Every structure is written in C-alpha cells, then in structure tokens.
Length: 276
Ligand SMILES: C[S@@+](CC[C@H](N)C(=O)[O-])C[C@H]1O[C@@H](n2cnc3c(N)ncnc32)[C@H](O)[C@@H]1O
Image (cartoon, rainbow, N blue to C red; front, side):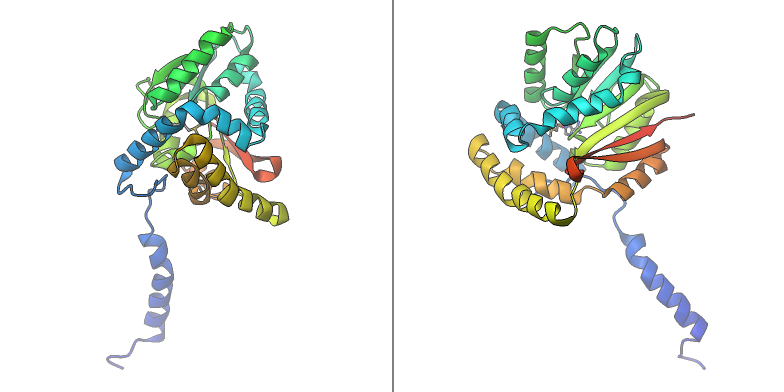
C-alpha cells in the first residue's frame, strides 16, 4: 500500500539506523586537551603542557608512580633486547620526554654499538634528556632530535625498533601516529608502545580513585600547574582499549600484534612487527 513502508523497507531502515552512529563517528581519534578545537591546537596544547611541567616532570613521575615507572621502562627495553643488542641496530624512542625510556634502551644495548635516537617536540623536555645523557655517558649514548612524532624528518624503512613510552597517547591522531611508525620501520622491524591502561575489578576501582582524584591534586600542588595532571586521567580514559588499539595496529599493517599488561593492567605494552 502507498505511504506505508513494506516489511522489507522497514527492515532496511532499521539496520541503517543501527549502522548510522557507526558511520557518522569521527574517524580520527587522538588526544584532545581541553579547549583544543582541532588537531594542530591539540598538538600545541600538549607541547605547551609538557614544556610547563618539564622542570618537575621526573620527580613527579617517580613519586606519583611509586617508582614503578622505572620497572616498566626496563621491562620494555628487556623485551626488545634481541633487537637492541644487534650491532648497528637503529632504534628510535618517540615522544622521549626527558629520556627515561631512551636510557633504558641504551642500558639494554650495552656495548653493542646500536644507534639510539630520542625524539620529542618539547624543547624543554629534550634539554633535560640531553643533560642526563651528559651525566651518564654510556657507550650507546642516545642522540636527540626535536621533531613531531607525526612527521619525523627521517627516511622510510630506517629503524629496526621504534618505541614510545607514555607519549603515544598524547598524539592528536593515533592512526597517523601508527602509520608514521610503520613508515619509519624497516621490514622485519618492531614497534613497542608502552602506555597506561585501565585496570579492572576491585583493584581498578581503588586505582581509579587514586588516578582521578589524588594524582591530579598532588600533581598540581608539586608542579604548580593545574591542567596537565587533570589531563592525564582524561587522556587515559579517551585512549582506545587494548582490543581496539590492537585492531588499529593491524589495520595499519602491523603483524604479530599483542598487548601485555604490566602491574595488573595499570600500564601495558603493545607490540607489532612490520613484515613485508
Ligand atoms: C608523558 S611524556 C613521556 C616521556 C617519556 N617517554 C617517559 O616515559 O617519561 C610525553 C611526551 O610526549 C611528547 N609528545 C607528545 N606529542 C608529541 C608529538 N606529536 N611529537 C613529539 N613529541 C610529542 C611530549 O612533549 C612529552 O615529552
């Protein structure tokens, strides 16, 4: 009958209505600090935020994580020892900040002669990384480059390993970040992204109180800046859950993708390989 939807039309409409929210979802996901209206504003806000807390960043990191962060960096570096210890291996630590992950990689490299590069777009964070490097003077001493992780001035197929610790989550476009890591890796190269997660169960509930209420308060008092430590829990909440992150890594082309929870899932390591 005219004016009435047939059963078939009804069914088609219903399935379209179900699909619509999926189709209209924004496809770009990434960090959005409050007040940032687009991707370049988000990146600028992230850079200003880290620059503002650079002087107290290390102290706060160790205090707020009860020093567990050191174990996480070391464990991540140890996971990739088979790559790092190869003579001449080229390693990139993206969003290196003051360089703790980079130095953990250098320690794992020992005297292998690997080339280790730390990249970050905050000059103030990099200055601290370089100063630490001068104090330590290891045989595999890292070098530093001030650059945006989404546009690294390095040719494709260059690195044997690309890592990022607690930095990837701050990128304005996660898929673009994954594509850039994939581009930079040599065939057979590996990627390790260490970042916070959201632990489940009772421990998760207790942790959330700490992470969302105590940490922003202590962070603001010690650093003297309010925004960054409120942004931290918000950015973790926004970050894809492990299943989604794994799917995004696979979509970009990574193989052998996995996620290993650290400390009950408070943090975790994503791994993937570029096999061509
Ligand atoms: C939470 S800190 C992590 C630093 C270090 N990897 C660590 O584990 O302590 C995040 C770092 O990512 C950097 N970062 C964020 N977005 C970036 C981008 N698009 N390009 C380069 N660095 C970026 C920030 O400047 C900051 O130093």
